[in-house]
Length: 501
Image (cartoon, rainbow, N blue to C red; front, side, top):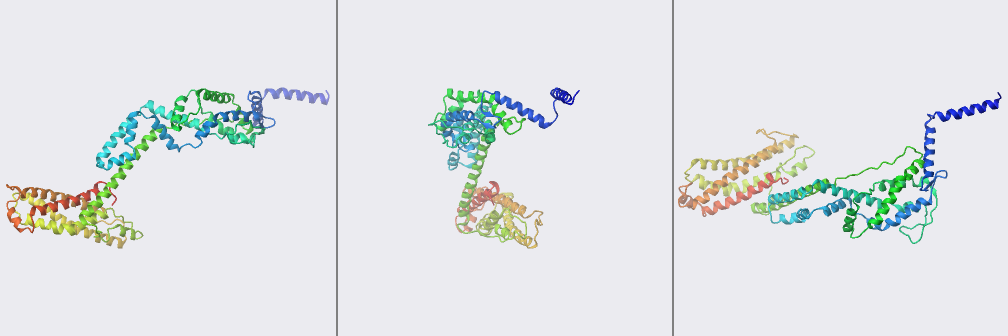
């Protein structure tokens, strides 16, 4: 057998066995896969791409041009969409029942603020809570699903319509003008590499369209939302059919796979099922709660200014030297001490010094020291409350001096002899002091009623007490009672309503 015959036989057997056994070479497998994809592209009814020349064809540009021509009016309408949160709220407002719309109107900032002018915050909060619960109770599963579905449908529709068709088409004809359909563009073949990203972006917005979705409901919303119709149902169905047919052919996936030299490429649609109702409920609840807190603070500040003016006039009340915000800021580098009750403690000291030890003491001397009580236990309770408040005046001074020493020594959490730290001590003085004032005022009110009673039950010597007083005793007690009431109201704002101190 000659040499040529031997080579022929080897070539024959090489081809024979090469067809029986697939090569394990990854590059060879990749080439075979790409070759198969090229055959599929060649057999497709959509002549969008020539593999050998690596060229996207004018026919593909024409397909996008025809789509762009149909979508252009809607694109102009949706070119400047509302912010996402505004859109979500528009869809929810559109989908609310008549009862829910009434409740939602009651929950606007304007409505709540207006009611706050004539209602106590506590009553307003209860009323608003009822409106909020009533609004949320009508969000059953069917309504929630419909709203979430409408939003998802609108987002997918808007993304599809506002896709940058013009940017893609201009690659095929640089002279093409945006939304100019007066003449047919002259599209030229271009390299496939230029449109790979465009195809991926288009598939991301187009493949999410569902032919069986509730499009009539979505177009009805757009008509109200934009005050304009977008498409007739017939025209939109043609668009959906056109897109669906291209998607079924898989021509775009095949082109991306071949052009990007990645035979394993497959488009993965990322479904976004946003639960906008849950977000709406949470945001509405947070907005209402924050508004009520703001109104509470504003009312507290207004009431505080009113009470301070009634108690101390327009004078700037300064009684403490060390337990102050100014001292805290001044010594921030020296100590980490933080003072929580500066303002109320300052006002407590001023009230005890400037008013309590004068006007209240005068009443005390008249009704306790000169008065003859029928019930000594009551007299003792009133006396104890009075004297404890006098002690608190001294304790506030002691606390202020203690803070000064703590700052000087750089202590971060000094403990007083009472076993409390500085803020705990301040809180104790304020709360216990307020309780003593309430108790004192309680007995004072009983004495006011008793002094005009023909059959006095508390004091048996009102005439003697009256002669010792510089002015009518009832008027003196009423004035002190009013002052105590005003001061306790001030303390309640700081200690009960969460006002910043």
